[in-house]
Length: 286
Image (cartoon, rainbow, N blue to C red; front, side, top):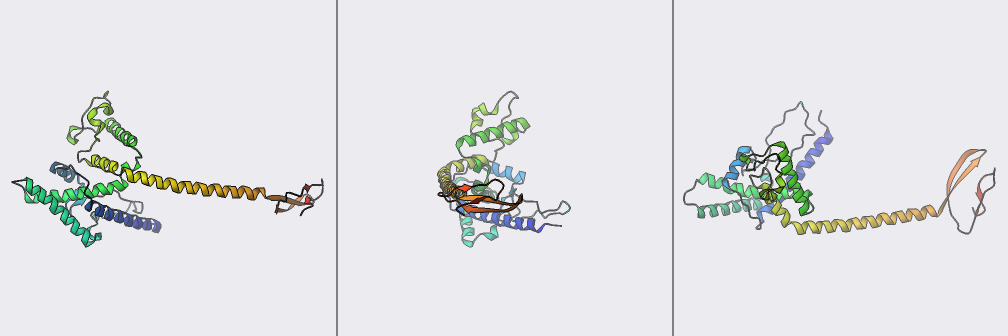
C-alpha cells in the first residue's frame, strides 16, 4: 500500500521541480552572456547515450533526478515523463524559445553552403536545450557545493582520481589513458578539464559558476547577517534566563521527613534565609 505522506512529498517535489525548470528556461532564454562551445558531434553523443530525447517537442534532455520512495517494489511505473515542461511555459516564453531557435538557424545557414535541413534544425534545438540545462544545473548541480575555486579544484581532482581508480578512462570518451603510476592531477591538460566531459557539460558549468561569484558572495553576506541576528537573539535569551535563575530561590518544604512541596520564590537581597535543623525551612522575609 502506498504511503499517503510519500505521495504528498512526491507531489511537492514535482511542483518544486517544475517551478525550477520553468525559471531556468526563462533565465536561459533571456541570457546573452553564455557562450556555448557545443558541436554536432556532442549532440550525436548525447542522442546515442539517451540523454537527449527526440520523442518530445521540443527535443530536450532527460531528467535523471527521480524520486522513487513512494513506489512499491511490486509496482510498475510508466517511464514517460514531461521532461521539457513545455506546457507549463507561458506563450511569451514559448515564443522566446522559437526566437532563439531561429537565431541559431540563421547563424548556421550563414556559415554553411551545403547542409542537411533536418540536422541543422535539430542542432538549433539542441543548442537552446543545452543552454537551458546549463542554467538549470547551475541551481542544483554539484558545483553549488563549492564555496571557492579551491573547492572546484579539489572536486575536479577527486573525480579524476575516482575515474583513474575505476579504470573508466578511455579514448572513446575523450579521456586520456594513463599508466598506473601516473597521477592525473599533475598532467597540465587535465588540470582544467573534467573526466568524462565529452559534452563539455562541466566546462560550461565551471564558467557559469565563476560568473556567479558576486551573487554567491552577496548571498553569503546575507546569510552571515541573519546568523549574527540569530546569535544575538540567542545571547539575549540566555542572559534573560540567567537573570531569572539568579532572581529566584527554590525552597523545598518537608513535613515529617517527606517531600511536601517545591516552590520558587523571588529572592530579596536584603533578607537572609535562616535554617533550623529538624524544622521546616523558612525565611524571615517570606
